[in-house]
Image (cartoon, rainbow, N blue to C red; front, side):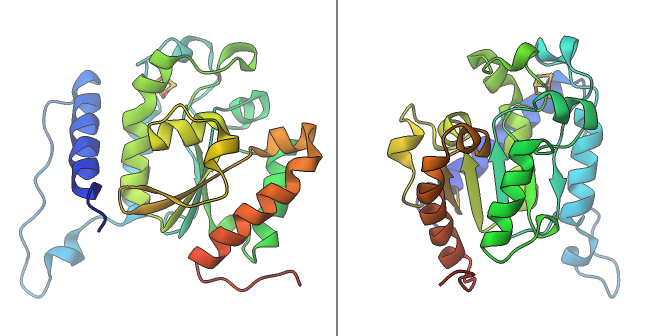
Amino acid sequence: MPPDALTDIVTTVHDYLQYLQRLGVTELPLPALPQQGKTREDLQLSPARRLQQLAETTRHCQQCRLSKSRTQVVFGTGNPEADLVFVGEAPGRDEDEQGEPFVGPAGQLLTRIIEAIGLRREHVYMLNVIKCRPPNNRNPLPDELVACRPILQAQLACLQPRVICALGNFAAQALLHTEEKISRLRGRLHWFGDMQVMPTYHPAYLLRNPQAKRAVWEDMQLVQRALGLRSQRG
Ligand code: SF4
């Protein structure tokens, strides 16, 4: 485990407990003691169950002003045991209506990017840094990012992927605690706790700037290698 991983884990647990406290949760169930023939591991909740519990807790979240304008919380979707997780910025109009991240044209492009490295959409997990749509698709505000961060950290603690692909400035900066632009962060792997992070351009940016597709392909090849996947192109 890299040197800062333990500090990150403690910070994650601390932030999540504070978040639960703000939601009014005053007690947490203790894990059951091992029963005869069962180990503590047998009794632990699966990532899918833990994510489901977290989604239920988050569904009525009112920790920031975005709760007033959203149609619904867009928690995330995909394989809870995925090795690769994509983290975007915030839900847009389509996502807000359908309750799923990456469902519009940018989502279709992301599907093609995933397939280019030999995976399918259902193999990965997708989520956003911010779970509720900012009005008129404006950028998330700093206090909204802070309010939503414990949910992001708790999701990643449940998922524990090998690689996180951070799509766009907001996702990369939120995960890496930096103000560096995506153009300077992309092209190499970083660390978030004991998970590797590949920052790259958001598919919505690629739709407006197709010349950036080559850079994304180079980044995805690094992801492919980190996951030990075989190249799909020559
Ligand atoms: S954006 Fe995050 S913190 Fe704000 S209301 Fe939605 S779930 Fe809660």
